Amino acid sequence: MEPVEWPELIELLNEAERLQQCGSWRIDHRSGAVLWSAQMHRLLESDPNQSVSVERLLDAVHPDDRNLVAASVRQSWLSGRPFQLEHRLQLPDGRINLVLHRGSTSCDERGEALFTVGTLQNLNHQRNLQLELEHATQTDAITGLPNRLASIRYLEQRIRELPYNRQVAILCLDLDNFQGINDSFGVDLGNQLLHWCGEHLRLRLQPSDWLARLDSDTFLVVRSESIGNIADALELGRQLQAWLHQVVPRLDTPMPVQLSACVGVSIAPDHGSDASSLLQWATTALTEAKRQGKGGLKAYSTAISQAIRESLDLEQRLARAIEREELQLHYQPQWDRERRLVGAEALLRWHTQRGETILPNRFIPLAEKSGLIRSIGRWVIEQALAQLHRWQHSGHHLPLLAINVSGQQLDPEEDPLDQLLLGLCEQWEIPATQLEVEVTETALISNPTAAARTLTALAEAGVRLAIDDFGTGYSSLASLQRLPLQRLKIDRCFVTDLASNASDRSIVKATILMAHELGLNCLAEGVETDRQLEQLLSLGCDSFQGFLLGKPMAALALEELIRRESAMSPNGN
Image 1: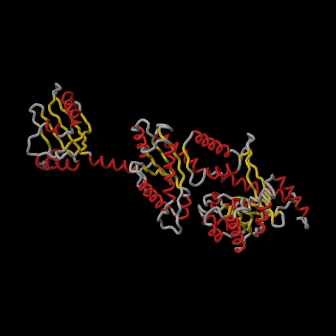
Image 2: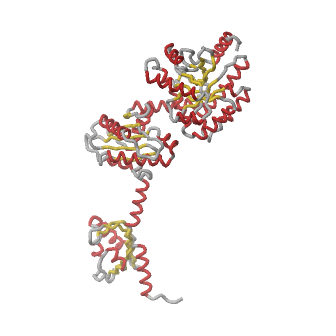
Image 3: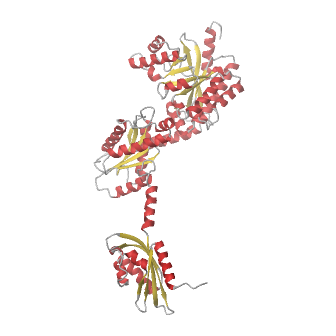
């Protein structure tokens, strides 16, 4: 091997230092001679023709760090131990560089220092990468806004710096029906909408306000200026809702998207001084606002927390309701224009072991939200068909039994509904034509293609299909065109004020006319007065259901009703 020449070796070391962005220095403690590498001069941006010294090196250190660096170097000289620290260099033009400074001292057998070698490595590149990484971990990729992690850090700082007798408002804003928009128009358009909302709100908020996206369709606004009390925070919530509702986003959609939002509010220090807790309280208030419906606005209170705990407790109890045999099916009769019994709807009831009766409008939404509706819905179908078989076996013929189906039961990842229903028909020897499946318009939104496929399979087997709560959901005409329906059910909200409200009367009349033009039957729900029934008859409605004609009843009571109706019928059926 050929020996390496010193000039070549020095050039190699200089190139290595340049690539690592580091420089080196050496002190000979016996002679006092100080040596800097060429890259050391570049790092300090010093003149290589000038003499070098330890003092000159310390002069290049930022004044606030100089004493620490000097002490670390001297300690190494005295003890022989290595040193390592990060500090700043102040360059001749005032720029600041961050460096990692390492060094070690070699001593003789008596412990006297012979020489010290040190290196300085420029950390600016690594620090910039670290800052970029921190920015990425604290920024929402879709909107470019800060995320939850950044928000908690910001809120912690604002609370620490909060002057006496000042308030900070924390508002969580959640877009209404964002999932429906995603399902209808696609994820890409949903992301465009989120980005638009971020830009739209940023333009209207104060420069000092904090705006972030927490998750999904939830945004966070923090305001620490001009907030005197919770009323000011709630007024800001109303402004946020108005800003979103008053402008239609410019998006590439088949139809305009009209936005609304729910807002939950907490305030510091009234609701606490911990950032995570304050954010949780605003989220808790948002949950309560969403329970109120679209456009809900709610400030946090301990009563809301209590309501959330009660809801969680109710959900846990509902999960055990089937095994505890607390659920029951009641049946509400359905009548035609001649007051003949033409069917019944199976309705779920919950009577707990504590003696409570939990109303459907309380536990059904909870079952939908928690996913329990899947197992409960299956139980309803199994129980309803078993009961229909018992009536048949005892000679009590019910012309039609209507069963409500959740959109989650039409999910393609679930066991196919058509296989379950038709399998039970075969097991209990029940004609498919004796069953009606009721779905709401909103149940068809999440996966309309799969839902249409399942419902079409049922219709081809003879099961009747009905749209429940017609006119209260979305894509009504599309549903009518896509599915082989037999019946529309007019929602009770249009029936309640039918006698006095001309608008409701016009809607009901148009619905009945449209249904008849399409060859569909119309059933009105919630018929509770003779006046309502008279109006519906005059408008041409085909069948009726409501307290006026029969409340939901237990299986034995309906059996007795079937017996009476059969006895009154001319042919005994």
